[in-house]
Image (cartoon, rainbow, N blue to C red; front, top):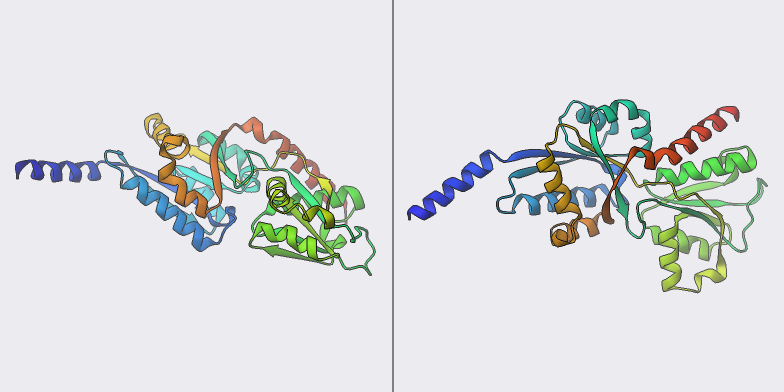
Length: 290
């Protein structure tokens, strides 16, 4: 009886004095629906919080507003965040003042960085002829794909991609990007290299109708994650161990698969310089084009 009482007292003490670690993720960073993202985040947090002697309590929140997430981070209300890369660049100087480590999510077949392909049906023609129908397909919430294509069209034709293509569509499933092109001679798509190669491996017939006409540099990331400098090393290391080490894959596997996350990768500021330089050149080029 006494041992049971002591155990209950220990659990209560451990819960009361566990370190709260708030996480904040931007809902549109993920390649799944917001409902799926929210559920995956809850599953992951619950599994960690149910571990014995963890010493921390994960408080996870999915944000709809990236500006609110940015402000909560610099004010120390959230310790781990994931932001779109353009939000990171916009507030880079101030964010880094409050950051001890950067990371990114490796999505599906991608590694740390993403290469994009512009693919087309072999019967289709890419030109500025307004009489020809040209549809362009993107993965929903993949703003980097649109940015790359816009930059490419500005350099190639001196106009943005919306002046080149008749209509653009956002699709929920990445595999549909390839099949839309395969079955439609007027269709084009921007697809991540890893997704395209996986689909072609499963269905080699794709190459009969589909060709790659442009390739991006390998400089894009799914998002930029930041760890607040106020997080003690003990807790930071514990969380990174639980989210990165193969030993603890069972804790994150369900949530990661649901949100299409492959791994978490640590990165440095310098790893994003190539993208930053590309974006600066793009904004300058865009300002010169009416």
